[in-house]
Image: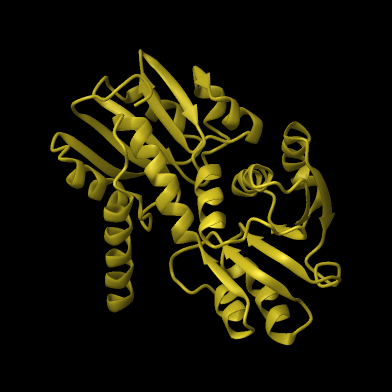
Length: 284
């Protein structure tokens, strides 16, 4: 928690759909490892329309919330305080209840930065991001943090990229918009980051397999089911592949620290998440 450790609290991940979320597994593993027996974490189905009333219904026993699609932007006008990074990105994936206030944070950026650094993909000078949503905006901030100032962004509709372009302006980054067709394959990429659903990236996977598109490293923020079509295609053609699971673990670790005031047990969280993914594959 931002003002120091608290003995107990309730937390949850909100989104729609949310049943697939691995966040409960990761956060509960952290609570077990830290001995936080009075803490609980659940998944709650919630869309933009329900969000205001749900926030109003939460009592003083609530410590925080994780937010996933489609709430990272919708929550902003409902917050009392917003950290500078979340304000720059225009998206908050974390709400902490402290001092009678709703405080918004973005741990997605840190999760992406850590995943890139662990994969040794921080020196890429020629980068393309697929998608223009909240996660794509966090990817821009993460790329800025590792020293990239010019990025290409592939979108299907230029009008939908306006929020992302505003974020790029606040971040002081240069963005060139490209489409998903020949323009995407017009040059080899050192790093390709996909922030779109797995099915939406299938045409890009086909381009990789056909050899019309080349990328040294491919980072897919989707983690389940794995490998995604894009990740599988990247593996087949010899690209280095970064899984969204790595981002997920580290953004969750940031949330644990904000909500509990304790250092997150990243190894225990990772192990629990991998075990759950294995269980899902075995019953799938």
